[in-house]
Length: 377
Image (cartoon, rainbow, N blue to C red):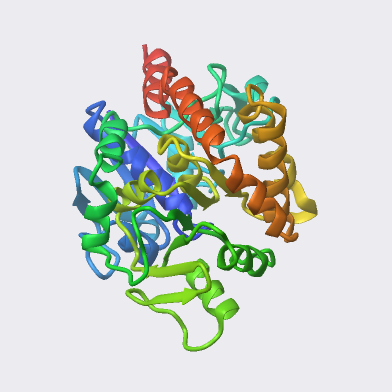
């Protein structure tokens, strides 16, 4: 049966990144026929450059992709319909879906969360007010009672290959950076606008251990340019600032970004997609939650830290909490970064253990398929 996944792009590439990864995995790992509906064609093309320049139906990597505005009543024929992140279906499609004599399996794929309440809501159906069709809330998460995390079968093999003995040398051959050494402390920076950034860059520039920072183009690179001053950084540029060697990268493919995360000693990530990828890289990381009104995102950060730090030593947990709190509240990251970097060895061991623990659970796509198959049967 056909699966329809609807995606409205809100968080730059996070929403479409999650939906594209999920669609590909449903096709290649589970043999599903997937149609992906997207409202922001420009964002889609950044991660799927094989798509046509103008919005039009196409097939890429086995996934049928359709512009959001093309939805009409004749296309509401899927056996499984997924609203990603409560995006709401196009009106004509929704009206046709409600009129069908046999309703589809209708899922609301929620945002990832570590909060405990999602376990009680995961898999719970809410009847559609128009005709009572049940819509099920599916919550990705970090426990067996949640919807799990996106994880392709080959993710760890690719990570281990990147982390091989010549991994950094091979990366530097592709992305040469004056002053960058394979022996330096490597960090990646992918963030939203953040008032804490100047203090972090200042800490890197005064580090006793040389720091190499890899910054993909976009919001993060623009923000770094503003902090450093001078001409704006563009992909391919390198700049020295004290102990910091900074390299501006072009927009990376999924595979290249995963490799970068695997090669770095510490990764700064944001939102949902890169947050999960950093955990599969098995390296210490700092997460910037998507900023929300009334600081709701800080509760999500704290809920994750409670799970992630549960088995940490007290001092290690304190250093992680301190830097994450400063980074997510626009505080001074100077002392927090120094403490975090000084704990890099135990934090790396913990990151590896955490990754291994999550890997023993079934992934998101597998849980979705099992759920839908049970309902259909």
